[in-house]
Image (cartoon, rainbow, N blue to C red; front, side, top):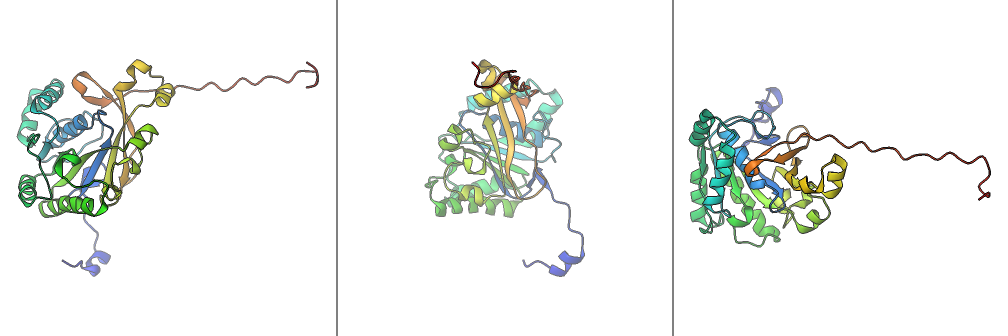
Length: 282
């Protein structure tokens, strides 16, 4: 349907509905991180919050609505453990609200392929009436070459179709490329593994970046505790104001909560006074 330009010029537009910070409802986005950084737990906590739970991540209030989480690489027992750890930090009333608003269906071993019409129709059916859907991880939902721009454009296009026709936002979890991880550049848009289409064709991309050795020294975190901290931020947002990144800390069972860190003050170098005699005197 063509836009009514006169209406757009003359009438105040409706408020933008953000499903996540700076992510417009009904669009496709990604959360990128190295393996083992905690993106599955992070996504699970986000899904629980939108389904009716509290803001344990400290991201601010998010509009509630039915949510679906489709993990395709973790066995059900691992997901149960995450849910149990999360549940230990919630009230009974929060348990009931999340259980009523969140659908989790493990797909490990079922080889979902969004390019297959059967799977496309099935995922679209699950998305009906939902506010947000998480796909964990992207590699598990297609069999295409991730470095090929054409096939990746089609994969993103399938997600966009589902989002546009159902109104359900889709966030896929994805791995960082090895180069970005080794260079400590996991917070950059280009950290996403595979074709640049996976960044260019989506409207929102967030990251989880493990604490580097340099960052641990900067924040006064000992080497033994460094693995408990991850940095969250948004590396691409086509709509909305910049979102300040923040540190999160792993707690019992991997549950992520805001970290309280104070930057270690660097002492200025000591300036030596010039000797009274000349430089030639030893």
